[in-house]
Length: 129
Image (cartoon, rainbow, N blue to C red; front, top):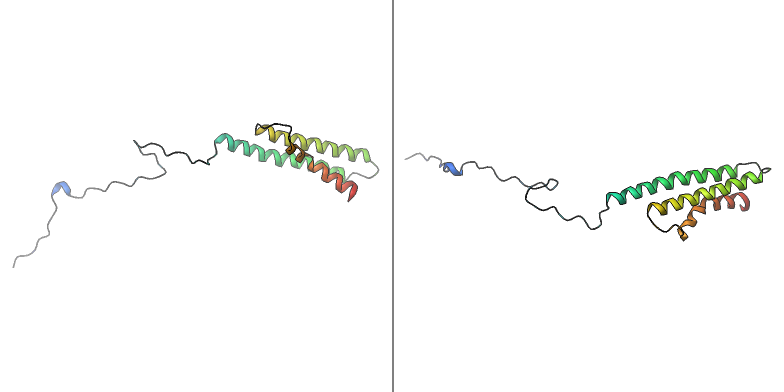
């Protein structure tokens, strides 16, 4: 009986490493970039929405603070209450106009009336509720 010897592959085929899988998050040389997603936002659009969120929060809080201060003024100072409500409405209008300007839309629009919402709630709670 002859002992069996393992057969060894020829030297040119021995232990060739497999080609690495391309990683999707890296750029592959010689391949074109994939097309951008059709609903992807540009950096400028994201910046506009961030500024819009900041403006709505900051200006909205300022307008509401003015309305709250108007509601806690003593009843014997009606001019102060009316003045603070008017200033709150103007601040709200400026905030709504600023948001429209950030998005490069017409300033005069029915959406501008949303700026009067804090003052309108103040008038309702201060005089009718």
